[in-house]
Image (tube, rainbow, N blue to C red; front, side):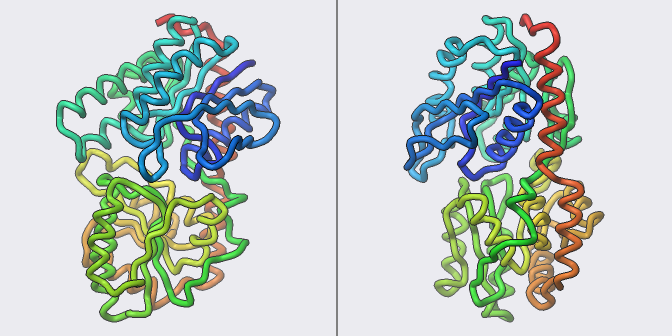
Length: 386
């Protein structure tokens, strides 16, 4: 079976999508598939093969000032050439497409022309995320494109029950498979080097946008710092809210809050292991309460407890598995959880238990195997003629 994966982001770029798609590519190869990945060139290196078993084809794209493919003009710099690349590639049995929705629309168009089925990998719902900050007209346009891309698919891969529900509401006509979300538990693990700041630190690792609302952590840390001036707050990653967070942090002494650029997975794991606790949030009531931040799973895999602020559904995951603290999206509640974490750091046995839960429940290998079942099934059935 020939499989093409179309994605603007792929390994070695450190992002949940990269890890997820790399694991899927390997799982498909292990089952005998010939996998080709159509993706973007990574700045600073000529090539980044994940191994010799996967054919990764890269082209340059327009990236923002921080070096990311983020924003619809940047997405289109990948999507427009993708149309020609998909038309030219040796005919696959099935295509897997990673959002944004514009990429999904290109894949639907080409797959209709070539009579090839495709699988849409819905890690989240982009139009719901856009609704938190974009004008209504833009949100309607994104929702229309997203729905069109989803409805033409032979199958949709969903990471949570909440995403599955929303995909159905957007009109998915065939199989919606909830494959779950996971992390690479060989990289994100309890054992390995840990960052050391010679001070207890709280870590926010990953994307920080309006959807996450990570400002609540800076505001809470300002209060904690009055009692624990030895504590530190570290942001590792990127996002549209980055500048706002930096502006808020200026109210504290230099060095109290550190902002670090996105790092390779192995480096991020070191920061996770060394943290007293990690931080994750989803601003509630914005139509995105179903999201399950991957940063929670990565933290658990490293044995580090997490402080989650936001929607009750995700908070229940943290509470039920005893992964840390689940609090409301409230500065006072967050500050109390931070104080608990800093004043009573997790013992080794607690960290071991958290990491063991992650190994048993959120291994990205198991997620990829479930996803590969769906992809192979879609490629084995009659092509999608729409």
